[in-house]
Amino acid sequence: MFRRLTRTQLVIDIVVAGLFALVALPFDLSIGRFYDNNALGTVLVALLMGGALALRRAAPGLALTVAWVGAIVQMAMARPPSTADIAVFGVLYATAAYGSRRTFWAGLASTFVGALVITIYLFAPLTDAGLSASTITTALAVALAAMFGLGLAWTVGALVRTGIRARENRRAQEVAEAEAAAESERTRIARDMHDVVAHSLAVVIAQADGARYASASDPDAAASALGTISTTARAALSDVRMLLAQLRHRQADGPQPTLADLEQLYAQVRAAGIALRVDVDPAPAVEVPTGVQLAVYRILQEALTNALRHGAGAPVDIALAWHADRVELSVRNETTAPGAPASGTPAGEGEAPRGHGVIGMRERAQLVGGALDAGREGGDFVVRATLPIGGGE
Image (cartoon, rainbow, N blue to C red; front, side):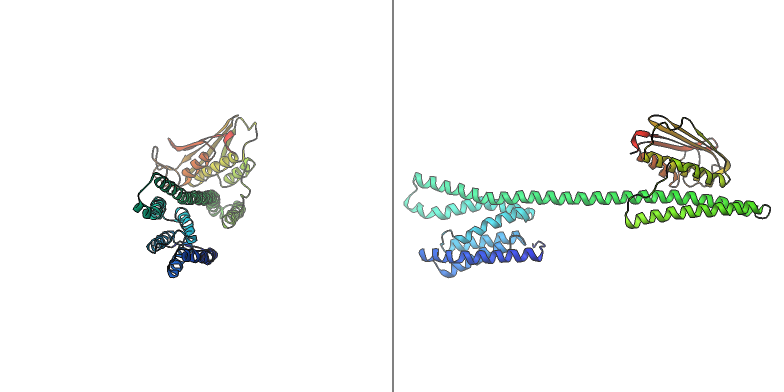
């Protein structure tokens, strides 16, 4: 029944209603003396109308009820229209602007019923002397005027209600857009985190296994492997710290990998003991959008990570073709037996991918308007992607 208002709004409504009652009461008492009415009834009607005015925003439905009670008391005491009746306009405005759906329509109905009641109350005593054409015309004019005045107050309130609803919808839309942007940012950071951590751990595991096997026969190879592990781990730690800082503080995007970082990526994989055969034909002839560069880097990073984790140790073939409107890339590597578990790769030819690797690569491609396919072809696992160069920014 009651709407939540601020303390300031409550104080303003109560003060306005109190001042209204104090101003209306002297006028109504003077009118009451002129018509020889009871002063107690005048005070009661003024208080009821003032109370309805005070409740108009906090409880529009209750305010409408109190206003009707005041009008009934006024008619029961045969009092003429007075200054206190002005509060009805404020109450009808509030029912349309702030009331519930039921109160909203009750206020509209009150405009028509109220105009009819006013007309009957004023012109019913004249029916005893007979109805003339001028009396009927005057009654119709009063009914239309009352309906117009009451309806105007309600209509203004309905317009305000529409503005309030539009402002609330706009605010809700802004909140939803902000939440969607935050969720998208968290997803991007999680995807970057997966790429960084998965690739770095794959390199570290490969180097650690190699160092363990070579430690007895070739100490220099073991030392070189440990150096690669240290370099890879430091780079991964730096990337993870940057991503976590973005997640905590919601800062702007930090530095992202570009095509210039591909050689470092290739070097890390080669240091892990995997031979790479890279073919770039044709080379980029135009400036490649940042989004496309990032997508190419992340797709290659994930594909090479899968080759490290699930490959058979055979060379990996990488092909990049930079056309005027698109880039085509493919990564082919020999895999383990089809029955071996492989996160992010299919368990066998024709089966659906397992894990998040292929899903993440496909999302990377789709973000820039491209497409990606990944699956087994015989004993190899092949990743193919086509990314439009014009859709990366």
